[in-house]
Image 1: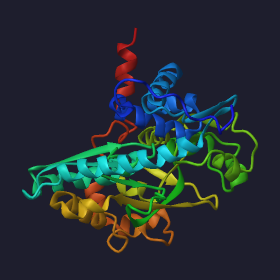
Image 2 (image 1 turned 180 degrees about the vertical axis):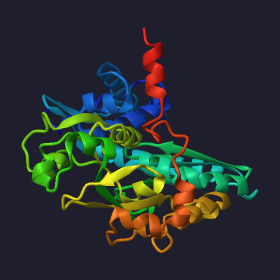
Image 3 (image 1 turned 180 degrees about the horizontal axis):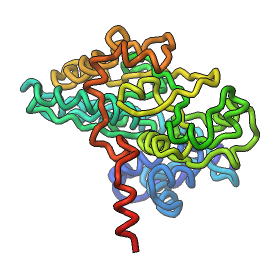
Length: 357
């Protein structure tokens, strides 16, 4: 289909814009960004037929053909590119109106939605959140643990704490610190299989693999210097909590934050000459600077990730065995007593076996 033949015939009765639905414009923008009706359907959790129906309805409403339908996807027509610019402006305006409607002058009260990676959210933020909540009883801290990228501009959350800095220049991004990752194993695993002393030896052990959209594909193969993880990875999961649980239960060697020992986890750092550092970014919209409740949360998040108070988040790597001494106060707060995997020697497994059919 040629780009030059993009215009469609307008309806004879009524205004074409009167048929316009904002939801259809949102579908249009996702299709434009993904370059495929099928991919857009997956992102929006609808089937391709629904996407096609929405786009066809939008094209009929405005009298323009928005996409070139190709065998390997879709591309915007010239008119489609123009419409996408206006649609994005409408999206930004709608988001701004929604943000302003939520900003209250009544003080620190209301709901603040914070999207954060699961490990940091569960094992670092939540233990400190309990005291924060006691001091701010009228504020609801909506902790959304996720390994998916969160789009702050589209109001998927009020703010995010993630490992990737958003590219949008209209958002405020603050580097809170760094997360250092190190391999760990349980005492039981060492007794059963021993521990590797190099990455080459690690490739002959059982590993726990964490996967997710924020983790680069192929990173485990690259680190281990292998073409395939077959026979190496015993458990693969997108959950940080599941990685810790599996490591504590002797399932293999897993990569955890260097502060893992301050959680009370009875683990052994595996010294194979490997550590990995990730940047921790706090992102929020500039409009939230006018909201008391949001800025209280922003300042609190900056305090609990302060590398001066908590050296584990500093730029410099510190060996996991040194951190309990440097984070003695944090260890008291962080204790994971009460978590299912906190005591691998508990009789829970035995009780389940006795009650099994």
